[in-house]
Length: 576
Image (cartoon, rainbow, N blue to C red; front, side):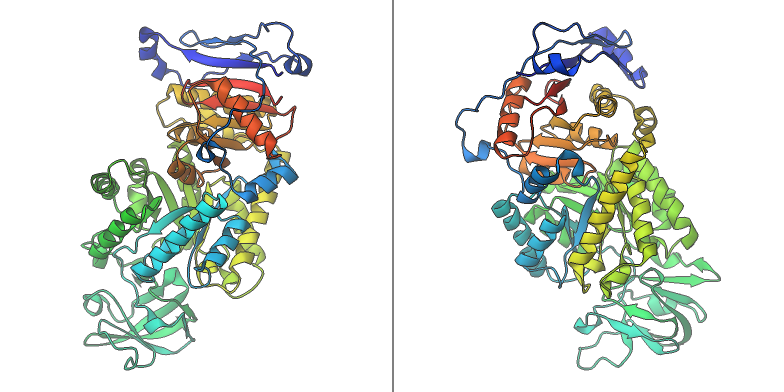
């Protein structure tokens, strides 16, 4: 048998009116020594002292881990084999906290290739609607779903809209084209059949392109990966000379600079969500994607409109909307956009084409911190391991860049071309995984837990009972050096609040809903399990311990902090 103590908040109607005034409570907890926890002989007199508006009772409640009654297969514990093997071999603290998003492309679109990415640590599969047909994307999404069903993974699917910004065509089906220094290229609004397209000619999707561009303007491709200067205009054709050589990729974004300033007028009247985007969104809703990432968000109204549309088209849908921060307009309305969204992505490539590149690091840090405060998952994306598109190892500077994003404790990192069309997608994924594990371990060893101060993290949001409970649970886990936090959640919100605090130990999130399990797989530190559970916390613990021990995923004696969004309680318990 094992001992435990429980914190359960209880507020009167009068007290509840005052509760929002309290920023954070810091209970003084007296924990019994390990011997009584393993073999309790009497009720402990554990006391928790809180500000007067919250009453907390604590008692030691023995829990047994008897064999659960027979249950249907759907009522068992669902976890993927990779997580199971990792927990068996390395224990709780070996788990990676930072999540990884992989863009699926020609190099990784077959079932076996997607499975290899999942085994290698992919948490979210991204499909980029700039490329491919709806049929191609449908096949990829269904392969991911099949993988989840057959192998127990919880890989979520993120659909990324194209947006209405100016971009190139698909290079007539070519994977890429090389622009050399001094070469003359033509950008035009004319369209050609692949067989009749002149050499070094690229079609642009914006009809007003030739009118808006002036001789002497600089044309940046894909955030500056290739650079041209406009030398001549002939009707619908814009003649350019390459000044910074590089690789041209299909449907790459185009931006123009004039007198060292970004030319924005051409995009002012373009909608954030184009007619093509709406068709793609209908497709994503029909296929049941988990996330829709919106490109070039200019205001919170765009996010609100899309969320209302999703609700109208698919009532009860759990599709989350991710705002891509990649333009000056996004930065002007940053807080409102993030508040309206379900998460954010720092798309540094396009962002770096619209603001001075030396500002990108500070903007990234600002977005990550703001998302933490507002309890929104945040993804750091673009050019993390760009060199690995062609080479089997990254540059040391790229590793340092990845380490900085992990040190900022972003929820997730994203591979784009590295996994979609690169020569070494699995190696790129392995680099993100290994660097994440090493930097996270270093932070724990050096006790870099400054960012977990709940009073700082939640300073811009009004408090709630669930928030205060999760803040306290995270502090308890750090102070008591708990092996893990278990959270039983029906909506995912409590698990999200725990993740925001970035506790020192991993968070096991148990939810009865498969779609919520997938969505939780984007958030820092969460290990999502699908498990049917009741409102009886002790019964849930009995069953969870039994199932985990039966599969060799947990050992006796470990200290677990247990949180439930059903009873809004905290419990600390030794594994029997």
